[in-house]
Image 1 (cartoon, rainbow, N blue to C red):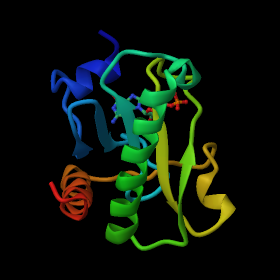
Image 2: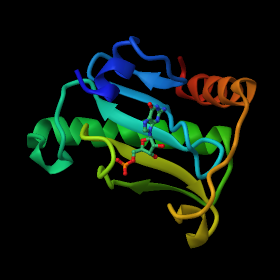
Image 3: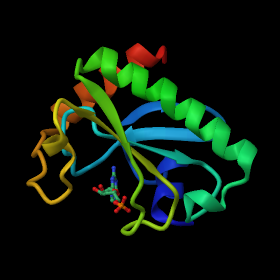
Image 4: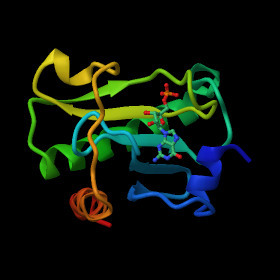
Length: 131
Ligand code: 5GP
């Protein structure tokens, strides 16, 4: 199993933001902003565009619902959706609350958050998601 499959299975701890039987959303451990979330399919697939149409559509709909929950929990101009996937070979969508283009610069210094802050952020998103 790859690292994100282990996270989705609960074998490696993470801060859960939302989940269902096919998809899992959790906080990025090196966030660009409070609420920076990763959304993954539970099924192991590396490249997002290798996903079948139906699975990809469901993935995007789930991601939209998570993005709406993030925006309610952390008001911002928009929630950006970014797909890189060069570091971890398990398809994932970054959801990042943004107010300007600079907020989505992956080269800038990441936030240092405490355990309590990560727990609080994920709890707020879960509550807005309805879980
Ligand atoms: P990418 O593959 O999209 O370039 O980057 C992978 C992202 O996953 C990075 O933003 C990194 O901080 C995050 N990440 C890598 N390993 C872990 C992990 O074990 N737990 C969590 N929560 N995030 C991770």
